[in-house]
Length: 365
Ligand code: PLP
Image (cartoon, rainbow, N blue to C red):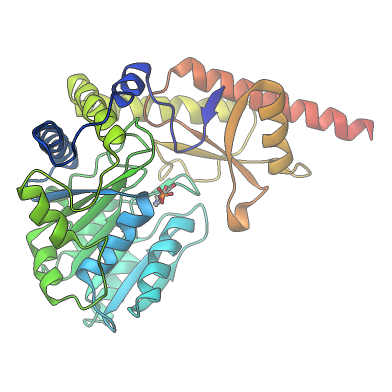
């Protein structure tokens, strides 16, 4: 099966095998060594000398941890949404009683740094900005450097970044950006199974942690930091995913992180070129199109859900679908993590054949 959804992504055999090892004592010396290696490896990829904590949970647990560890009820926060995951980030903060000011863009568009500059200059009470780096639901990457520069003009203002589907595949250099909380999830470009989430915390984020009054227990990053100092996690970790992540980080760092970014960029460009060559339309403007996932408009008269089902059943290729207002209107081809160019060729050929099949079925009715 050619799995082309944007996470969980296919896991290379050597990493899969690394994850299949026998259990160990998660409070013993072997796990301590793995936790230390994985934490140090992640810090290199995140580009941070600050704290890096690993949670057992999916990416959403890391989003929630970003909120509950740095914000307080009633804090005014600007939540920038360009799709489903930006809205989820805002919703999490709302649930906790944060005063969320939402700025929403059309699905397929990127956020405008100048809009953000205007909003922030008009409202000095905004304490934090939440933004998605790479919006997986639409295949759009925000200009995180420009956004970070604007947000951090006031160094006290917090910048919380969801980099779940970018980190490790598209540059998101945490310290260089001056970002305060940056999160990711294991099942994306990291080439490992779901189960772990990563959170980078700046010094400023820890100051905010001291002030934060939101309830937290499992996701309390102060506990994670204390336990990390002892070579442990507060709660039982997903040990097998740690094994896999240790192996995948070695693979990523052996290849060289810059080479990994270049590989993702060229595979994304190849994907977009081939999609256009098939006469299909990309959802996003190419200047903001993602290097990890490509969203393709489904031609009028065809239902994307029916198309994906047909392609899966007939050609053994699994595409991502459209979410919410994009349901049935787009299909998504993921190219993050461990991907051979031939797998993209195969997926796009299946898309082309699937479309032709559906058109000819339609014309026979
Ligand atoms: N943020 C982004 C950008 C994502 O792509 C995802 C998952 O697809 C999430 C957050 C949520 O992660 P999870 O589904 O692991 O909870």
